[in-house]
Image 1 (cartoon, helix red, strand yellow):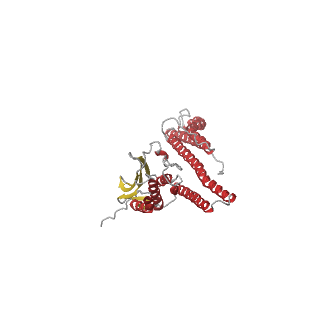
Image 2: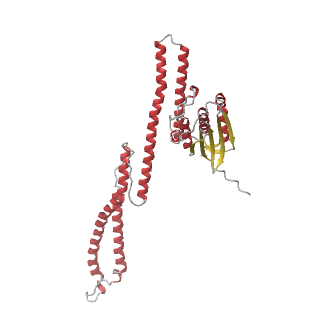
Image 3: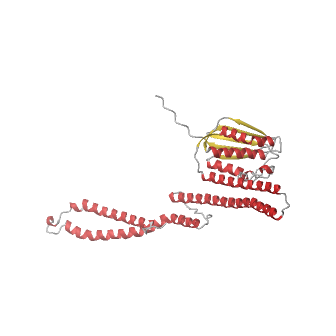
Length: 368
């Protein structure tokens, strides 16, 4: 942005210091004049012109006062320049760090030494911002790389199938069309998941009261045919739990959780339990499923990262997934200022606990 030239902050502080010092000196001389010289008789009242009088004192005092004021001005400018430079040195370090970050180096930190004051708090806040920005950029780069890799796979398969259909006319076209349909459906699912993930990260939605118990029942009803085909028992329990958020995103969050619990369950005869309740000022949604074995503790932090499918691959081709189920859940929870907790079950499987903020209570009507 082009700006007109102006005085630097250091020069402004210098002029302010010098002006204040000059004003203080002038005020001091005025006090001397008012309270001292006014009690001295003028020359006409002196005894034979020998006694000290106002005329002589003014002629003697005025040049010395002018010299003193000139010294105060020079001293104020020089001292103010030095003091302003020392006081603004932390801002110079912060500005240098900002320019370094603007050039693409987000790993640089100010790390301002010394006791806490306004400048140190600003430097610490700037370091925290740089740390969060670096983590976000790193996550976005990794996500973009993974997304491009995941999208390249179905496109490459589609190209291979089309080349095969063109070069081998004896190939069963029905089989090729079915495989193309499956690959394209996976690519569409991945694209929609990426768009939903980006929407949740932007927080561009309207918040309204949402009942998690109704959301859980709708998600379970939608996925009940899938659970029945896999011989999974799906139970919804709990009580009404009002949360503040977007109903569409919260429903997608619950659907992803329940679907993830079904397809990562035992091959058959497993259970998935969805429970809602209000607890400690928050609305809670728990989704618990059985599983073939205990989930390792070191795997849990990676399950909410994009394109991470854990160590178990129990899903069938019908629900091969795109590796964004729990990543979308995590993004939606974060966009709603909630928390997500993943814990392994001792007998196998996973317990996911979502806590979302409750809507503010409406003020009660005052009694007449």
